Length: 235
Image (cartoon, helix red, strand yellow):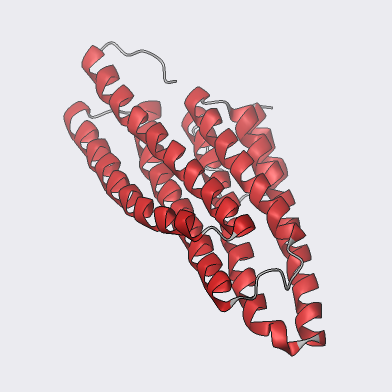
């Protein structure tokens, strides 16, 4: 958590907005985990719950953004405090978008179930990447709570494994659809699901990058991974 400030009111405002961020993070974690469970079991009741809860995330994002603006206006923070508030705003945007991706998984799952084509494609890579996405999202939020740049750099490294699972699934899917054009429709549904999971990993990575920005004052977006690790470790 951030260091204490001379202004107890600033600390109170900051702790309040951070509590909302982590509440939102917990909801998104559940959304992603539920989306994967719905996919694995074609649970349409769970799909409906995901679609309802996604609207709650939209409202929470707007609420946190407004509170960050109010804190900046009232307290006029500088340096690390300002970077923290800016990163909080960007973090909730990434959380909301991760929730959007969970919604996409849920909607495609419902479509596959209703079409009666479940089980026609081997989706082992999708299952593995989904489990990885849940894990790194949780670890990104934990690193944010502790402002742990070393853990943040590890999240960025681990996201590459999700990307590789996605690429492997795409290669296999293209081969399968070429051999059997009858599976193209469901293949595209699973392709959208796999891409949504890959994007959840990207959003976790974005959150990890904000941690390095807060602590080190260095914008590490769009730089090579080796340079990002150098900044995170302070070498």
